[in-house]
Amino acid sequence: MKLTGLLLAIFLLSPWAYAEQANPVIQDFGYFYQVPEHATIAADTRYKIAFDVAPAAKAGEQNNHINSLARFINMHVAHGVKPENIELALVVHGGASVDVLSNKFYKERLGVDNKNQALIRQLLDNNTQVYVCGQSATHYKISAEQLIPGVQMALSAMTAHAQLQQQGYTLNPF
Image (cartoon, rainbow, N blue to C red; front, side, top):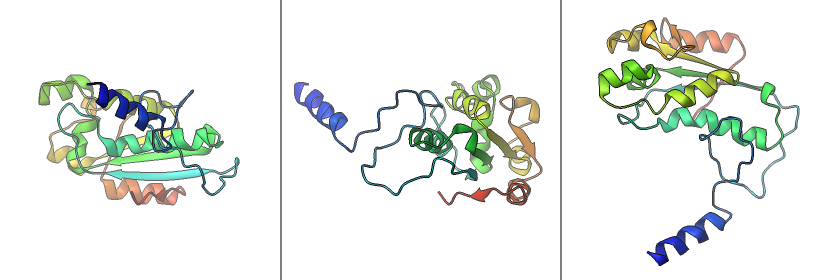
């Protein structure tokens, strides 16, 4: 037991540990690693990025692909980018469509709480648009009324991405 605690302490104090986040924008999500030597990021940098998420989380678990948006926000704000200069969009389709269900409907469907709801609410409150593919939602029998408030039903993920590109969003390849 003592050895495990010692190893954990060594890891947490190492440069490979998650960065300490005194005031993260997205609370309890979006941890990132410190990178001692990285290219400089200009403070006036502006980001308009769309993230595409299709894989679903296991029932009752957080979708780490959705958490990537929180990591992007927290990491860049911690390195001097103004939060208002970060505009993100999340386009959800496929199995991940269930991850944007409000807790009531998620729990009815899967029997456990939706661990993604708090994350998605914070993303929505921090300059992020969230879309679910209407084609996937229809396939998974999800209606607009079942979604976390603020999540928008798109005609399709393809449509959402095309519209976001026209608005100047780039697609994050991860």
